[in-house]
Image 1 (cartoon, rainbow, N blue to C red):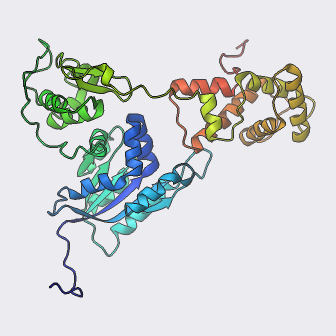
Image 2 (tube, one colour):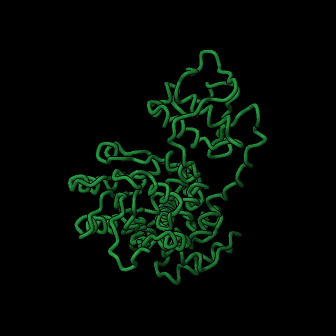
Image 3 (cartoon, rainbow, N blue to C red):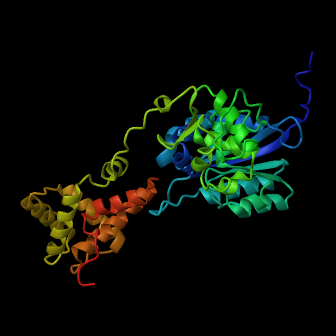
Length: 415
């Protein structure tokens, strides 16, 4: 019988430390696959276990002695419990400025350097982030002769490839989150006859065979990111420009009639046409609310219409000629909006005035409606940034049209 008081023997696996920039990775995954982002946020133990089970260079897998997660509590506090249950120490890193910059980077770096210089020798450091903020930190790990692994949720920075011992790319992370434990295994023999398009991608291409094996044996349509992962693992050179086709969708469309691809619904799907059709794809996600609906839901920005905002700035332009006193101005603008048929509450007007003061510093009696709209829109964008809201070019244009009351849509005449 084993002596319960005997000194423990050293675990044969590599001793590792994990540092996760939650906000960065989560938002990166959201742009690739929202469902994968939720799995990352709600089941961290699963993908960490998959990494731990792999050979860490010392045999016996890895042993994560340190697991740190850094997140913005004002945006992502609902995920804290999932990470603490997975053995992570969660550090709150709230946004400290209107530009949305938090203390994640400095806290992560300080903690990592403390571990590097600590009494416990860590064999391998893991940094999970979606950008190249931590390249200098990775350099310090390598200078101390520690193995380094970077987990990214976006485009891989060239510096990471050169400095890190291992880079777990976004498509590999997606496969891990989908439970594809055998994602890195060599492709098996392709079952059954596969018809290829004459002149298409080579029948003997390792990437093609991997895709065929995966898709033909899948129980249903497969997310494009997972199929792309299989192809890239089998044939890494495809990562340059997909064999001259530029994009994954164009490349996979050349394989043959049996393998079908559609970019809709997001994030894109691949299926075996002999067994499935587009009717078997998931339903398109519900339409995302318009920007003017999203922003008031997430922030305290008044839920006014474009016409109401326009009237606020027009009224404010004229009333500022009479007074710059905040209380008097708010009442006069409110009354003017009501008289014009675009009624706005006084509290909404006060919120706009506060935002203008924050951006401009003081109310200017000579300000034009367009200048007021510009300053207010800058304030709204800053508020959205602080709360973690992100917009593509089209959404940003819609935001500026709405918050600016349509006054920013065209250059002022006479310029």
